[in-house]
Image 1 (cartoon, rainbow, N blue to C red):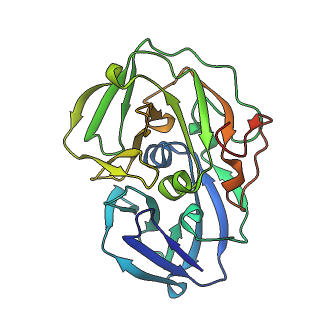
Image 2 (tube, rainbow, N blue to C red):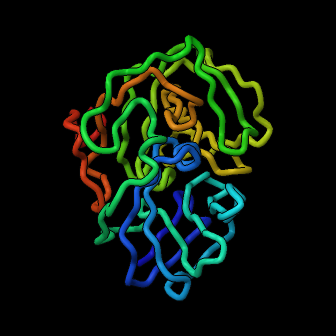
Length: 255
């Protein structure tokens, strides 16, 4: 079973048996993926890197490192120290996975705009200015308004880059103020948009569409977003390993 980042600079192969996916809502996983992350796992004997031109690793904690593509910013791997296993993004797999989400962990750290299982909560109070940052803190910016309506996107690009699926809210780009941006990079997507990510830790940060519409990944907001998940788009492209159970509107494409 083969997987890859969006640009193809990282390609890997996993050989079953595979552990089913675990959805993690910890702050670290939300920062790097931009929403929350799901990771399947395989013994290292069943894991093989085919291409690693873009592969970079970030020491995210004393216990583990995270692998991502430094060319397109795709979230790909989590490798715990002292264990002979590799956790990988099921969203990076090409074609059907045959997997399922077996459990949700660190649900107490979930964002205020969604619930791990069930409909999203009532929006929580948020400061008038939202602060946002990548996992390593090398990129920091502010948005002068609450998140409002947040849209989950299940298109192949968003699943490849986030490792699961994305959730973001629209904001005029002119209102975004950067306090630090040295490791910031952008990747030009096949559809004509541009993805902003941190080249040091791999965190997904924002998307600028071909028509210049700008959206911020909800998972990078520090603290409450003041927003609420409002619906799902491109569900025709969603992964086979998860179900949508929040009761929100689902669009096969964008509309």
